[in-house]
Amino acid sequence: MSDPALIALDWGTTNVRAALLDSHGAVLEERRGESGVGQFNTQQFEQQFETLTQGWPKVSAIAAGMIGSKQGWVEAPYLGVPCSTNQLSQSLVSFQNNGRDVTIVPGLKLDNGVRYDVMRGEETQLAGFLAHNKGFSGTVIMPGTHSKWVMLENEHIVDFRTYMTGEFFDAVSEHTILRHSVSDQSGPDTIFDQKVKELSGATGSIEGELFGLRARHLLEGCGEGRLRQELSALLIMAELRAGVLDGFALQKNVVVIGTDTLTVFYETALAALGHDSKRFKGTTLVWPALLNLAVKAKLIEGQAA
Amino acid sequence: MSDPALIALDWGTTNVRAALLDSHGAVLEERRGESGVGQFNTQQFEQQFETLTQGWPKVSAIAAGMIGSKQGWVEAPYLGVPCSTNQLSQSLVSFQNNGRDVTIVPGLKLDNGVRYDVMRGEETQLAGFLAHNKGFSGTVIMPGTHSKWVMLENEHIVDFRTYMTGEFFDAVSEHTILRHSVSDQSGPDTIFDQKVKELSGATGSIEGELFGLRARHLLEGCGEGRLRQELSALLIMAELRAGVLDGFALQKNVVVIGTDTLTVFYETALAALGHDSKRFKGTTLVWPALLNLAVKAKLIEGQAA
Image (tube, rainbow over the protein chains, first blue to last red):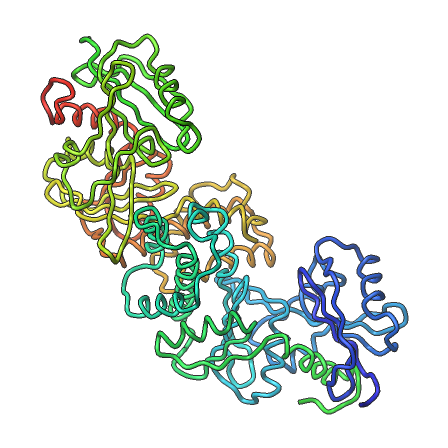
């Protein structure tokens, strides 16, 4: 085990993960804490950082995620796409905190006067993916509260789009009439599988199927667990249809990055449409990516991937 | 002015309207009250009916809307489509209340083992529309919390589908990240007009545009009132696209029934897609429809339309 070389932070809206890494990326220690983004002031972020890194050596720190937003610690302005990992490493925002270099990774923006989009955090997972998949061109789907679809070409992030699928699921299942029919979470995943297969051959709208869940519940009283799985299937298939309409290629080189649970759902839905995909766990990409960005930016010594 | 002949009630989920009609449909008096559907028990509904009709003569009463649901006063089981106004008039549910005939109009259901849908209240507006548009065949759009699209053929309601557009608008604008960007209601309708025109020629998805409202707000800080109008345009255009996918014809004989505000939005959106439509005010169809159903069912004497 080598000496500690870098503190890496995955600092999102609700949680922060901190890791002490050696120069090869080995995790010496990992900790978790409350994010504070949107609630803390500068002093509180400094305090939170000190608490998270207490007892760790005074090596440089690098953070990704909402911590770089206007409501975060120090703003790291969005970098426009198309851009490469190299450009990302040249746009880091560094400052001194209590005698230590702290660096924040910027988010990415799309702003061409017609379409607007932003991401924060996913760019780092993408940098991690690209470090080990040199020359990859294809579509990366990053499911979640706000699913990101990304076009990668020759190691550049050339375009991306956000679909609010996770947040729709919550809003629809908690704040519409469907709440009476989809609260039971006990439905088996096989229901999801059946429903995406059924939808893959259907020509009708997804919108027109949503109230049908409620009507079926009223008319047939069929199990709520079933209906929650069907709602999942409907919203994920709606996202896939939207991605295709928006020009994302699914014929080859489709990668799904996220949690195990979500990426399996997307892999199943893609398979129902006849598309192969590879799954990657998003969180495992972050530490290597931050180490690589730190090396590229010469914050620490080492060999960039 | 003739003698009072019928008490008509438009008894929905949140409100009830009651009217005393003469045998020609003239409104002698109109009153409003709280619905109680989902909250009242039988005795409370009886009491509410007595309060609403206090001092009115003991003529027959006929009610449409959620009052006939399981959570209403007396359940009027759904009638399956396809069906005609005549079949609707043969499926009324009558009972005695305090020495007076009370009749409830059933809702309609679609349940073919593949698709499920229900309506309650709209069937009466449709009966009112058909009474004065004999032989109409075409698509009727009834925008609202749960928009209903209805296929009419030779005076039969042959198919229908519900799109949860109004409820989506509320859920998305109040319970997702968009709430920070669309709370301002001051945007002029011209923004809506512009946006539906822009969308009418677009090939991309609607889903992919929603987060764009938030991103645009973050990146350009453009007026919130503008973004609320654009959200309206996006969701209504999504409904129109869905209706077309679901096989509803918009080339000719398109009728929009609802409030003045909503029907104008839909007329504008349909026009952007190149479709003419005629608007009807939904509430004005209800009293003539209930009178006509009462005559057809021989609850009162008269000449059915």
